[in-house]
Image (cartoon, protein in one colour):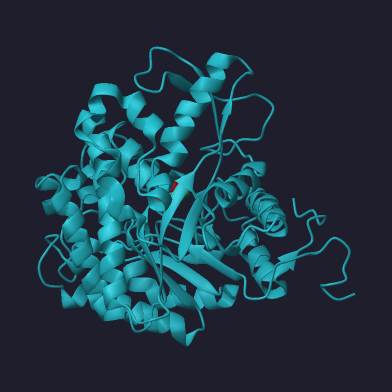
Length: 458
Ligand code: FCB
């Protein structure tokens, strides 16, 4: 029996791209090398109490020096695409002005190495490592940062635009807004609702200006998009109050960014909810964000279940953790949410093309006596989520590729090295790499362009 006729085999369309993702700060290390300037994450990780066990990303996965080895591992896995980010503080150490050639050279070599191996580069311009000097001047709370971002996009496009076809402006702006400016769990560590709102508006502007800059620099055929993360929101009960609470959270978590991209306006109910806080903002302030996109990058990990809680400002809602479902170290495992999300995006906004730019799970795995890393929970997670992607494809959603988060175990922000997301295990003492069972499984999925959901690997 070949792959097509095997009973139950889920085959993905020809040309479907199979990838893995990383981000600069989480894997590179070498924070002081070749002229890199400090970022807000350098500053944040140096503050006591912010990161698990006081860890930092000075070495991270050591990718800055081991990039060639990592390219070989990608080739062994058979990846068709690799999503990485360029570090703004390597390219403009002070956040503006001419490019630091040594910083650009690193990505230049990486891109050549990918293309030599037949792996398509997906380049993210901003994955949270804002140059510290821009933060000192107001960071995402000032519109100047949006202009600087467009300048930076232009520099990178000038250098790599002849070889990189897929460009992603921002990664998960809602995380920067909520975790970075409202809850203070991420850099820059602010807990200020007004700053959070400004950061959302200015990131939307930055995205819009960067799209225009990229379009003017890049050759015809370049594809420009953004990566947003989504969490379908469910009410904890059928009560009117819980359903209203779910709607409010949904507005923040899922519509704040996608709606301006496709309509040029902030959701009206969002501004109502913010009341006097939103007085300085007009729905059309984000009009530049509506420059047409070639694709939407979607990150999916989990859903949110919420109940009414009048003490919580603005949203009057609180997350709860329902019993009876499987959980990972960070989130509930809810594969169905990916299908629901993809069909909702398709119905509501009709993106021309979708890439799942992140999906994955932290598993506390380790090396067994025989040298293998049996991360079967990760295989199960990936299989169950790919099953939902396949369902969405059958329902007509234009999903063109899927990237596992992550290629390598890495520095998981405030959780430090506690959370391992990689298809490849990294020993953080020696920086030695070993392909996990999930990596071998994924490699087979890529080779056959699909998998048999009946097969139990766990
Ligand atoms: C996403 C981030 C990524 C990684 C995963 C687990 O929110 O984009 O850097 O931390 O979560």
